[in-house]
Image 1 (cartoon, rainbow, N blue to C red):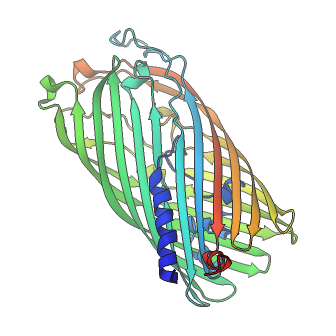
Image 2 (cartoon, one colour):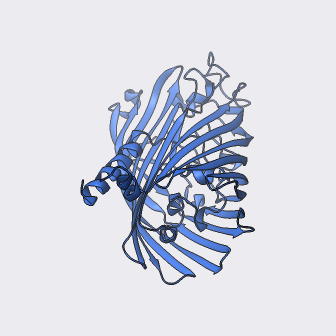
Image 3 (cartoon, rainbow, N blue to C red):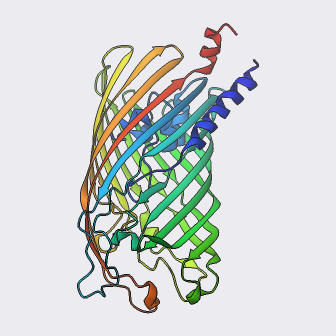
Length: 434
């Protein structure tokens, strides 16, 4: 098989893995950090400074220059979230229009499978090209349809696919930089229920464009500093809005538009080799979630089925980790992170009952042979309970669809398991004798 055909084969396999599933669950906001099994094992400490695999390209395209020849990597992550309110109550003084509804939301978090793939090719001593394919944002929650909380959000699904071609330039042994293009697809499906039946649903999709940029500095042989930026991406989701009250609003199905901007993100990381076997890593990450003020559906005459204000704030993540080379074949990892949620107490809702969280992670890499390295990472997230206190709806919301207010306390935690394989295709095909 010619080299070009081999590249196409590996790229096609990566694309198939990516499109198989791309839904996240209960991330910080609905951001999906889980783009790397290697860095999963360190709570994402050191992401923008680079690693043994390719996945740091997601945070910083300049790290592509750390890899010689042609490399491929595939990651697969399972996110198992738990978020449940067992005592949902109507707000004080609200009308008793929600009689008969359950006070138990059930576990609203759903199993999510998040794939990602990376491709790097060195053209010469100074230039690299690459491609990252990811699902950087996603959400999948579902309240018990007979619960009080379902009036405020029954099913919520957001999917994204991001294609990120990039180029890296190595200026010298100390400085490298990289830039890339984001081609982002977003699809949303949000619904609410009333007395166990669907009352409203909005669904739509759109393509958006953004960019990535980054820099790596190596001031000493043992220190690497990385700075990476992912731009915001604007979307105008065009689709349909359904309301189960056509007498009020005319036809039950209407064309609708939702404008939404995915936030930009800045990541600063450091890797410090302490000995030949042990390294310390750290990351500070900022995400511009304060862009999300409202989630308005337009135009729907006289009634927005999602009138809640979001008013999210910027989120921060601080992580520290360690990497120990136990042997030439085995590397062990561990890490801790604190993540400040973008969701304020005053506007927390049943679709994303997110709150501040602490990460604890462990991981390992095994060099199987000269063309294959396998990685695994596990994290448990201790998430602060998410309290919700919503007042009853008032005008201009029509009387027949006013909600009675909600008081609830979601107990949350998340488990994450991630695996990956990093491959040198040239050595793989050489081993096959081709």
